Image (cartoon, rainbow, N blue to C red):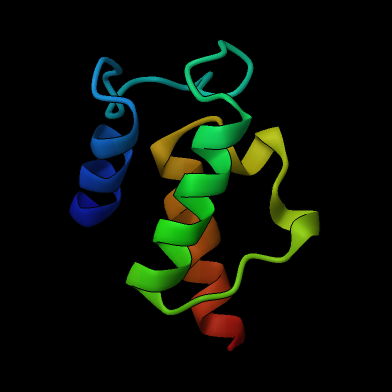
Length: 76
């Protein structure tokens, strides 16, 4: 999870990822940030994020992102 927070901070440093629960809904991450984030996560955690997983529910918080990463790792 720490590495995920580091990746998020590299993309958008002004957000408190430990507590933020509206990264998408609150417009903290835009579409280009999300594309960048997906690429970084796939490289760093050796997972493939299917298009159907790129939804606000999975990307609104670091906690939800981490849960998705763990789930995808278990599925592979």
